[in-house]
Image 1 (tube, rainbow, N blue to C red):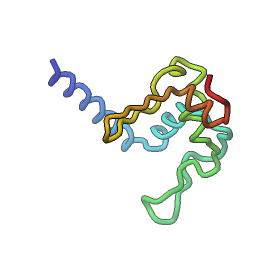
Image 2 (spheres, rainbow, N blue to C red):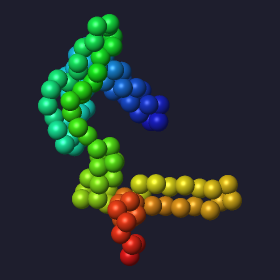
Image 3 (tube, rainbow, N blue to C red):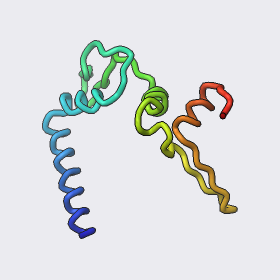
Image 4 (cartoon, rainbow, N blue to C red):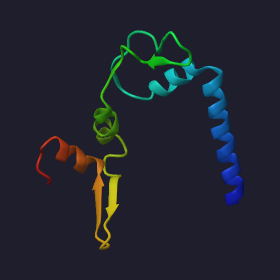
Length: 110
């Protein structure tokens, strides 16, 4: 059963890869649509003089912090683990998205 799941996952990844090569601009647009952007204007890619170089989303504005943390606290991930660490001495630390959000924004933990 485990091997079959691995084969299916590999087939899915191969299909994603094929799609990204077949039409990179629409593929990247689809991925970008899953994120929050403050500004979506201009082309998805700005071609440069030498292929394969180009600038992706040259005039778009995004906040990685917002996408990685802020938007998670209004959904089902709010109280899920965002960060887990285990030190060499066996000490563990588990932080939720909401806890990290409060820490980042300077609010005291409750």
